[in-house]
Length: 307
Ligand code: NAP
Image 1: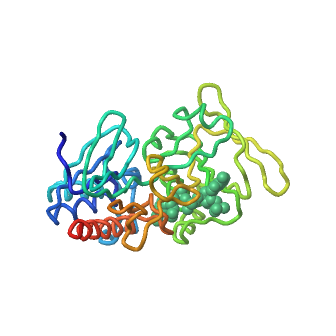
Image 2: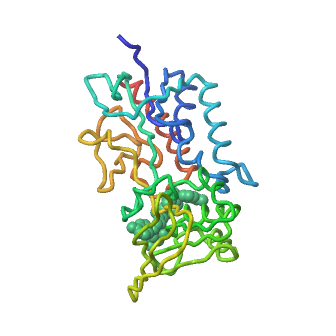
């Protein structure tokens, strides 16, 4: 029989790595499971300017690498796995299954984060990886002296549009309203950036191209006029969707599949907790994810003392 852990943490982003640091220090036998590379979405962020302690900002990859080292230092084990398929409670056991493996613990912290949402328009899926991207940090350098469009008006869209101006000759921000949602400081910078061109009140309708992105079609929401823009790439930042498919039927979630918890971050299943971007919280920030990871870990330790 495989060994039993005190806690299994699903996801090695800021929430999961912080939880692992705390449960490791509590001398709980800790396993962190990760389907990709550690760091989560934060690791694909070029520069994080609102994480305390780094007045000059810090690279997302650099920050999460440090978090990973710290969790390992205090005894957490990190294991790369295929995506988690199911979780379940069976008596005192909390079981995590992937397609080919099964792990058992006395508790679980779900810190599986979220990923960029697709818009679901013609051409998006067909040209994914051939000009359609959801990660400027990963793909931006391919667009040196080229023209790209960023879809969305939130923090991610505006930050990533500014990152893309390092390479691209022109960056369109296509937003469905005439005002950005992003933090004011980001808005100010973007509005001043000469390489950024705003396409306001516009819905993206199609991505076109033969073999690679060549053109996008946007529609003005007021007069329904359609315009074609010649672009080499299009980056989608229209919000995120939580990685919680494996929770279906077991864990209570909201209408968008974010996980409900109580104030101790415990879900409807005793011994299963959730932290960070996958949780139904109002603010998606690295600082919040880290705080929730710490809180979930402390509550797991209390839970294990009581059972
Ligand atoms: P977000 O804040 O939810 O913004 C999504 C943007 O996409 C909004 O401007 C929204 O328009 C637009 N949008 C949504 N659905 C759309 C649709 N169907 N068609 C066209 N546009 C659509 O999400 P995000 O910017 O991807 O960021 C995700 C989370 O991470 C947020 O909580 C964000 O604050 C956080 N984050 C923070 C930072 C930072 O603090 N520096 C950086 C990156 C991400 P409306 O404005 O009209 O709703």
